Length: 176
Image 1 (cartoon, rainbow, N blue to C red):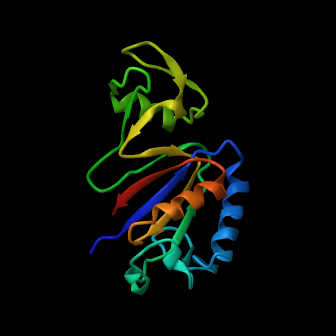
Image 2 (spheres, rainbow, N blue to C red):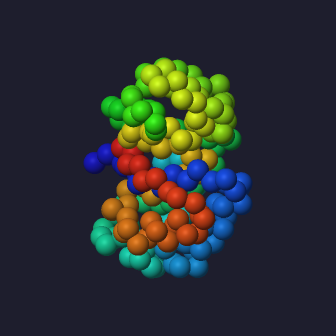
């Protein structure tokens, strides 16, 4: 069985270093994850499922796996989330909906272009902030909540996470 993650991606206008601890505190208070970091993710330390994990998922069978925790990712800048085995996210203009060749957009991301920097569409020539572009099979964000090997997250839980983040979240599935 390969590992996978349901990733809730946030593009927060509030500093993500403020949002992440606030959300973690609420997850711990709700009993969804444990308070003490452990080696339960594929990345850095994570937070194992808590006694009330059923509030986030219907099926808790994943709790028996070694990799079963929440990993919180705080990149240095806006990052593209959604890389997985065998696919790459693609971009489309939010105005004319034309798909954009990935090369230029990935170049901008690697160069550290701010999500608030304007990028012109080669088709309609409209310039808009990077964060306004549509990302297919991925999401742009500055904060990611990776739920490793969790079964599908409940819609009500995702809505609760949005409230705690005070920003909309994009759900991305990543398989390793």
